[in-house]
Each structure stands twice: as structure tokens, then as C-alpha cells.
Length: 218
Image 1 (cartoon, helix red, strand yellow):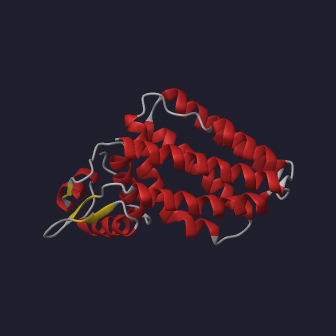
Image 2 (image 1 turned 180 degrees about the vertical axis):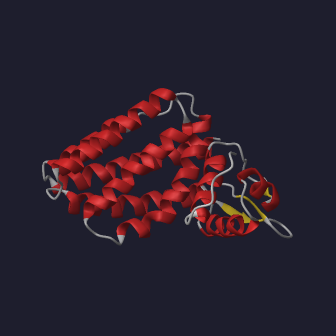
């Protein structure tokens, strides 16, 4: 891990750095978390590390260790299925709300994210693939016009990153889901609310089946 500069959102930076380490497989399920080592590696004090660890525990990425302390949580396939079920419902609604209410500038922004995602898949870099996917879904939330959707989904997206990392590490040929993303954005741009909602739900339902099947097979 690289040292990071102190900024107002330091806790979020520490949290993101830890999540990337876990999602990329550098920290394994069951591995004990040592605050002092993390603080030293990131070049920060223990306080933001402690706060970041609590956030990740509350979001299911970490869990209490036997005795005391925290460990990297083992993934629960049923919990993953429940998260994707919720995401399908809420993101379907977000896409319905966004349909017909998107500017040309936003369409260009969405197309740029899709291009970024395609390049990430081509690179094979797990961190880049995960970051691009999360960025696209957060973009959909912003298009909805409902300011409650993003905060409500934040915890689920954090856990999703953990899931994606676990699966991508074992998957020698990562799925290219960006054609699906492009079709969702196209439906939104054309004001096809029913289709946008349908495509979003199908996208996440298929993702759920893929992720859960891979987790159960591992």
C-alpha cells in the first residue's frame, strides 16, 4: 500500500485503500487486521484507520475476530444474492426515473465511463474493472434525480466490490458486461423507461446468478 496525503476525507481514503487491498486478493478471507501495520503502510495515524475499519465492519467486509480485533470476512453466497435482489429493484427504479431526463452532456459522460470500462476489461486489472463498474452504477443513481438512492446503495456497492474482487481473482476470462451497460444507457437516453428498468433488472439478476454460482463453486 502506498502512503496517502492527509485530506479532509482521510477516513474515506483509508477505507478505499483497504477495500482495494481486500478486493484484489492481497488480504485474504480470515486474515487478521492489524491497525498499526495499516497505519504505517498508509502513512497515517491510527485514528482514521480505526474509523475506516469500523465502517468496513458495519458494511460486512470485515467481521469480529475470535477473542478481539477484526478479520477479513468470508463471503456469504445467500447474502450476496439478497444484495443483488435489492440492487435490481432499486437500480431498476433509478433507470426508470432517469429515462427521458438526461442531457446530452450526461450521455457523453456515460459513454466515457463505458469506454473506461471496456479498457479496464482489456487491461485485465481487477481494481480498474471494479472501479469502472461501480462508477457506472453510481452514475445511474445520479441520473435518477432522487438524492436518496446513492446514499441508500453505498453500503451495498461496498460489499459488491468485495464480491467482484473475489470472483474476478478466480475468473481467468472476466465477463465483459459493458455491452449491457451501453444498452441500459441507450434506453435511458431514448426515454424508454420500461426498457431501461427491464434491462437494469436483468443485468443485475444475471450478475447475481453468475456471482453466486462462482462463490458456491469455489
